[in-house]
Length: 87
Image (cartoon, rainbow, N blue to C red):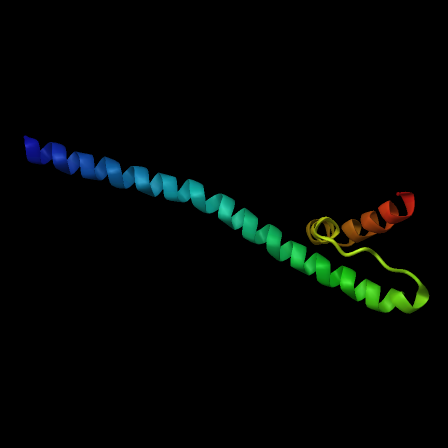
C-alpha cells in the first residue's frame, strides 16, 4: 500500500512539473518573439535613417519605436513617422 502511494505521489509530482514547465515556456516564447521583432524594427528604422539622413529625414531610434516598427511592420513605421511630426 505504501509503495502505491509513493508511486502515485511521483506521478502527481511529475505532472505538476510538466504543467508548470509548459506555463513558463509560453511567456518565454512571447518575449523572444518581441525581442526579435524589436531588432527587425530597429534595423528597418536604421535603414530609413541612412537613406533619409541626407534628405534631412530621420526617425529617432529607441526601444519603443523599434518595438512598434517590429510588431506592426510597415504600418508601425508609418505610425512612428506620423507621431514624430505630431509630437
